[in-house]
Structures are given as structure tokens and as C-alpha cells.
Amino acid sequence: MVSGELWALVREIHARGDSIQLYWSISPEIRQWEESRVEKVRKLIQSTTGESYDIERLKMLPLDPKFGRFILTDGEIDYGILWAMKMSGECARVLAFSIHTNLQGKGLGHTGWKKFADEAIRMGIKEVQLEVRQDNDSAIRLYKRRGLKIRGQIIGFYRGKKGWLMFGPLNSEPSPQ
Ligand SMILES: CC(C)(COP(=O)(O)OP(=O)(O)OC[C@H]1O[C@@H](n2cnc3c(N)ncnc32)[C@H](O)[C@@H]1OP(=O)(O)O)[C@@H](O)C(=O)NCCC(=O)NCCS
View 1: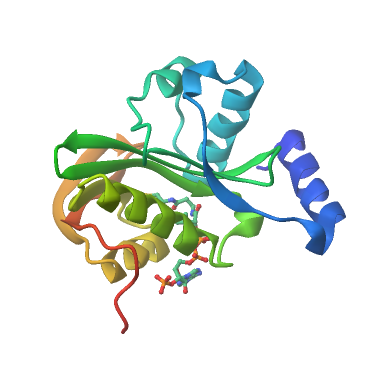
View 2 (view 1 turned 120 degrees about the vertical axis):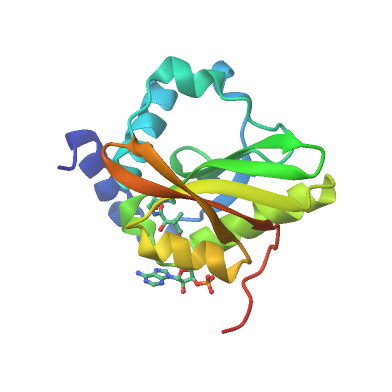
């Protein structure tokens, strides 16, 4: 079910047509955002992944200031996020990677991952881990092409659906296949 607010966003994207210029940028700390902005991103995560978080939890995520707060934006609206944290000196964990449904499959995820990986590598990160639902075939393929492998199973997080823990070297480009 798409909310009225999301439809308004979709209409806005269409109204802007080809003039829309989207780019990945590092945002300020989430706890500094206006409540309405966090709420929109909360809805974006929910509509793209089915995962439900409360606003206070999102504000408290320990996102890395250099490579962990990427947003896909036109300068005004958030159309996607790639949020990550540092796990250790050389390992990052991706906490959220979501792009507005109407904008998926256009290469924006590829450029978002590249931005994140290039910046994280520059900060000395060599490995990455993340969790993904087992039925999310396209995301699993995306991660496998970038060198991640399934390391374990997650049970009891995705509303009854099982997840995979994926881990591997941090690569900014997919391997040719
Ligand atoms: C996962 C997600 C962020 C990827 O962003 P995207 O903009 O759709 O991805 P892109 O268009 O850049 O495509 C990424 C890759 O998947 C491929 N791809 C895109 N859509 C695909 C599809 N429907 N089926 C198979 N492959 C597809 C592309 O060819 C590209 O290949 P590459 O790995 O060689 O670069 C986005 O689809 C999304 O928000 N999905 C819903 C939320 C989600 O599942 N998040 C991940 C949770 S861990």
C-alpha cells in the first residue's frame, strides 16, 4: 500500500521529468534533521524493505560521519539512503540501503554503493558486512557481485522471514560476470 505522501513524491518526480538531477551526498547527523525529514526516510525504509523502525531509533544510529550518512537527493528531497557504521578499524556495516521504488533499477544503487565504498576505503575500511532478507534476490545478487558472501543466517528479525548475514571485502565496483 503506497501512502498519499509517497504518491505526492512520485507525482513530483514525474512533474520534474528529465530536469531532475539526483546525486549522492553526505547529510548532517540524523539527530539534527527536522522530525518530518526523519519520518519521510522512515517511510522510505518501510516501503522499500518492509522494515519498521521508530524515529528515535533512527536518530540514534551510530552512523559514520565520513562514509555512513549518504543520501540520494536533488538538493531538497531524500530519494534514497545508504547508511553505514564502523564496526572496527577495518570493517564497516551497512545498516540501510534504500532507493525510492520508482527510481530503482536505474543505476542509482550502483553509484551509491560506489560513493560509500570509495569513501570508506579512503578511511581505511577493507571489509563490509550487512543483513539482507533471504527472498531479496536482486539485492543479494548486487552484494555478491561486489564480493560479499553469505556468512550466516538471521532468524526472527524480518517479521518471520529469514535473513542472511553477508560479509566480504569492500569493493566499489562489481566484478564482471
Ligand atoms: C537495493 C537497491 C538499493 C539497489 O538500488 P538500484 O538503484 O535499484 O540498483 P541499480 O539500478 O544500481 O542496480 C544495481 C545492480 O542490480 C542490477 N539490477 C537492478 N535491478 C535488477 C533487477 N530487477 N533484477 C536483477 N538485477 C537488477 C543492475 O544491473 C546492477 O548491476 P551491477 O551489480 O552490475 O551494478 C534498491 O533496489 C532498493 O532500494 N531496493 C529495495 C530496498 C532493499 O532491498 N535494500 C537492500 C536491503 S539489504
